[in-house]
Amino acid sequence: MRVCHLVSATNGARWAVEQLSWLRDRYGHDVTAVVGGSNGSLIDMLKEAGIRVHAEEGFGAYDSVASVLRLPAAVWRLAWWLRRERFDVVQSHLLFAMIATRFAAWFADVPVRLAMYASPFHLEVPRTFWMDRLTWWTETRLIASCKYTDDILARLGVASARRAVIYYGADNDQYDPDKTPAVDLRAEYGWPSSTKIVVKVAYFYAKMSDNDWVPAVLRGKNPKGFVDLVRATPAILAKHPETKVVLVGNGWGEPGTAYMEEVRHLVQDLGLSESIIFTGFRRDTAGILRGADVAVQASLYENVGGVIESLMVECPTVATAVCGMVDCVIDGETGILVRPSDPADLARGINDMLCDRPRARALAANGGLLARERFSLARTCADLDQLYRSERSVLRRRFYNPLVSLARCAIGVPILAWFVLRVAHRDFYMTSHWPTHRNRLKSILDTTFSFDTYWRSIANQLPYGPPPGTLLPLRIRWANRRVTAGLHLARWHIELPMHLRMYRQRLTSWVRSHLSTLRGQLVTAGLHASRRWVEAPMYLRMYRQQTVSWLGKHSPGWGLMRKLAELRRGLQPNGPGQAALQQTPIEPPVCDSAE
Image 1 (cartoon, helix red, strand yellow):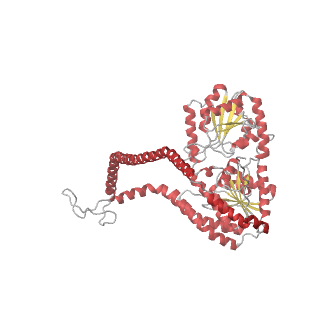
Image 2: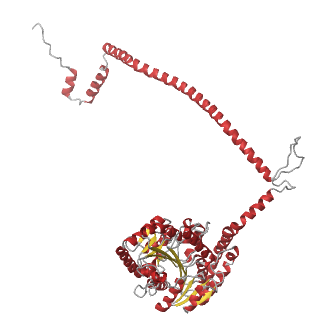
Image 3: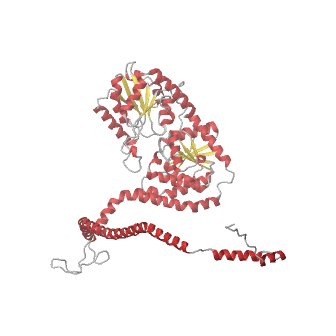
């Protein structure tokens, strides 16, 4: 399987060389590296390892308007080269390399397109976060190198099926505790055998800029936390006077060297020159960590940093609880975690390791097992090989299709053009040229024009005013309008309470007038209701008496009864006996009262 890794750097990035070497030697992949220049330590390491190198000038370098405007040409050249080489897998590592690679690999119709995040740095910066959000959908899979980054990608909306977690592991052979002899710094510097050694292995990087390209926690600070370790040293010496703090590493470029000298001056000002040692660049860092009592990583912002190396050689490790370092340094199990930018807490963690040596060795042993199992280079390359093969096996259609490339160019070229113009104009051009344009605009606004386009001529002639047709500069008119607006505002501040009192009085009088009318209507209604309650019994008694007197004088109902009797007789049958009875009515017996 043909694999291509793209890195925008030309120095450092040893992990890229290690990954490509293992993928080639252990898994048989045909590997190629694309870098952003033709000179640098990374190019030398790649050539020494026998890895094919393709240099793309200006690839992934966004440091000026011109460099951003050259991006479309770099994307076009890279896409053409990828189509010609027909890689199965293309994997980018750093942000600026990701942007160019995403467009180029998508245009070229590469089968498997991967992006491996070396750090969550740019995902927490608004100025670069939108770049990733705009282009991540062109990738087949996004590889987070720690759980912290994976959580950010999940919040970004990337589905779990398109995410993977693979760490940047350390070389198993280089940091094998059984094969790595300990470097005796005590004998090298002539220290007593009872001396306790605290080691920090890291480059001296310059302080981060205080702008929108840097996370808020790092603006104006050094990411490695050297100053915190220096300020924590007095608290360490208070409990362990024989301790030596060894800083292994040199400055990264001229700015890094200048910062290292700044740290030296701080050490001298604090009177710690005998206790804090600067060793400079050393190639035997694994042996130094193997022979140290405590390894420290006090970074303010880090992926997994140098904690993997110290854990793999089973050195007791104290690290700050930031980003990906919490994945490998589990507090109380594989090491001790402390708060970032807190020298007192850092000193507490180091003193705990120095005071309880059996516990420190147990933590180091647990850390070594975890690092070799999960954070080794062998595990990293095994996971990458499995990911390559699984993604390649899923894809069935024929890739590097020219019709697909044309369709994608029609969609992606406008997006790329908008991206370039936005970055060039907003992030670089306006940032550096806006002060100059602002001064020019002010000078233009102060100029008196001879035509009445933006301001009006003065019509009214005053004894002390300018002659007819004189035009005032716009800046003066704006000042006059501001004064007028201030006068109107002051007027409202004075008149508003007066108007409020007036309207309140009007409202009160209106409510009172309507309430008095309503009160009269309610009283009248109440009187009418009470009258009915008083008069109703009187009328009832009167009508009842009249009814009773009328019933006593008349015998109502006889006529109705007579009509009913006649109707009943008419309905009875007419027989002979019945006729006789009808003709001769039966007289009721008369009783003789005398008898």
